[in-house]
Length: 144
Image (cartoon, rainbow, N blue to C red):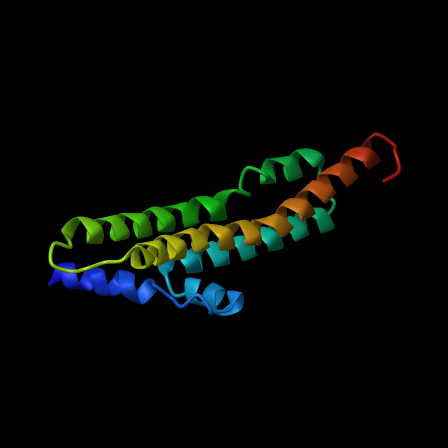
């Protein structure tokens, strides 16, 4: 029974190739790790905008860069969970015929969570880096 649930989970994750980027991104939010990645990314972006807008010291903004990889680390956990599920289906499928497309679709869905986390983290990185450079230049009396 558990084996068939794993197979159906992996095959359900095997989405058609014609699916749009937006619908795949929305589908990523259905998982717990996908939702955590999105919420963490939004909170980090809002915090970065606040730090830059309130003219925090460069050290405060630089220390914020430590939190920047958090959505990527959360999505990495979701990625590993998906890969483990895909490989366990392969390992336990003695009488079920799986194609490479089925396995590749499961791996693709797992990789997509990391892709979404990187896309969410990029704007935060640029906001924090811009604020850090601007504060550093204005602290040194340079114009930026």
